[in-house]
Length: 301
Image (cartoon, rainbow, N blue to C red):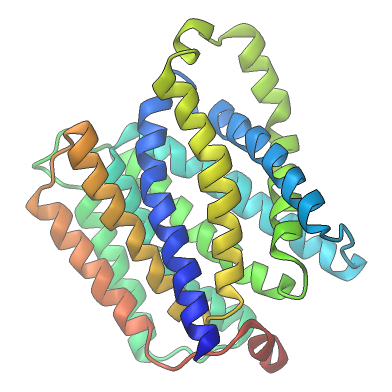
């Protein structure tokens, strides 16, 4: 029970932090395009994680047999998922970004069955179908002309890749969550550095970047969303079954929608809530089955 409560608190915190992340992206992405924005976000996060590594005296050692999993999780989660997520948010809205990526839990069921040998029931299959339909309602909302099909599809890719990364990190549960997060973010930063530097030297608008909403958003994305959010999410997943842990992604759209309405005057339409409700039902169906810790799940697999 103690593990369940601790995991719930950590995952709720991560989901809430990421709800605010979509506002930060909307405030900065028109000045800093998605790839350079992710690169600057990770550069900021690496500095914060280095201080955490030193302060907590976390080991840098990763066993050779686990390095492939770590690299794969970093490329899928910290590169593919975050870049498509911020691209989709740029093309749509903060609420749309937060709700579509909240379909992640349903896809965590699929990857949990595949990689961790969780039982794939009819209810869990139905959960994926409902979540997908919910995403389509949000993407093809005729009442909100600000929505963009390619943006919605980018967010859909972000949801799927984040789900896969979330299951892969369960194989790294024996390591410090700060160490895993540090290596993942560092790899993402290094992969994006060539393009990030090219953009910084050829296209960056330094005057616009100096505005408070822009650099403040970069700091939020790097230190709060990446360092705090990733560490809380990865640690919380060690206490939860994949499908149960994914439920807490729903703190993300609640916070993102509320802040988008409050700060950016983004409309909330009936199609948006229909899609949200279908995703919610899908995730609730995915929760049926009980809870295991990461150690128990790996032993079963």
